[in-house]
Amino acid sequence: AQSVSQHNHHVILSEAASLELGCNYSYGGTVNLFWYVQYPGQHLQLLLKYFSGDPLVKGIKGFEAEFIKSKFSFNLRKPSVQWSDTAEYFCAVNAGFAAGNKLTFGGGTRVLVKP
Amino acid sequence: SAVISQKPSRDICQRGTSLTIQCQVDSQVTMMFWYRQQPGQSLTLIATANQGSEATYESGFVIDKFPISRPNLTFSTLTVSNLSPEDSSIYLCSVDRVTGELFFGEGSRLTVL
Image (cartoon, each protein chain N blue to C red):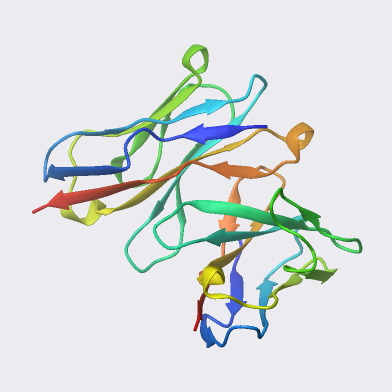
């Protein structure tokens, strides 16, 4: 079964600092990878996704993520955070129809950006 | 994208009762899923709602506790039965447009007293 690990449960940083959130998954086959964000009091929104092609994907709000197949990783980055990036971030993996075509989420990382 | 409407958005229920949550999508979708997000935790898949057949439940979730209906390609319901305080969670409906990307409803926040 597929699983997803997010190493940081909580991250606190100041505005303009750089952000990197780790995500590793366990599944040997082809995967689709996602990062979702949940702002306080709001529902989940898709930040970015990787299906194939360029392993460096760019999403909304200046976020990007890099898929490193050899490391089973899909880390999220933002060069300079803003106070409005305070949210919870979830990494998710879909291993396709062979694995039930279901999305498995990591435990989430709560990010607090101090003004 | 897909517009997903869930009802109720929140409810407070007494233990031992049941709550049925409705999920309506603005267009036909192949895959519909029900997730649970317990306080301070990540999302856990409860089941895949299959149109015209019984739902497929994940380990730890059973039909008697979480009966699901999916009468057509745009609608599903999740019932949480015999409620206990441990069932207090946000329940989320989500849909997949074949690409593997899920779209989520705004969730139904359940509090059990």
